[in-house]
Image 1: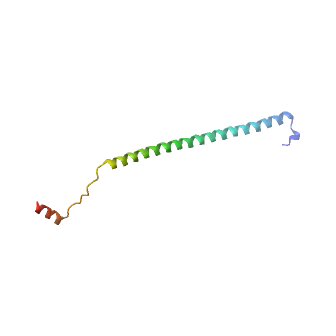
Image 2: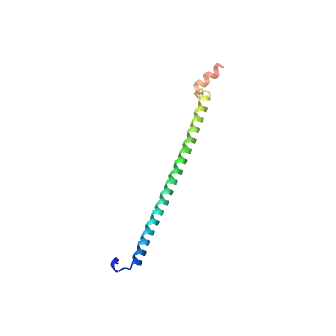
Image 3: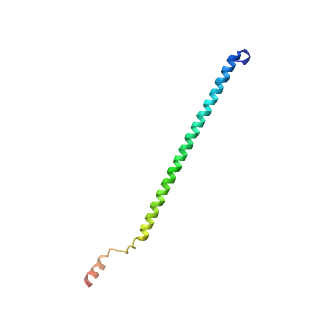
Length: 89
């Protein structure tokens, strides 16, 4: 439809509708952007929390391993060695 054949009120109504559509799209885009931003922030916070927990657990394990006495190497005696040990007792 050509603008030449439209009345002034029709032109204004059409322009207003186009403006409102554009504004609604801007609002939708802003809400989408904010939702994505919030989701990425939540993911980052969760990752930081999990990393801190993992590092704390690894530090605890390392401290416990350092504090524990070293294990003596024990080997099961073979049949002949066990007989010799038993015979010498």
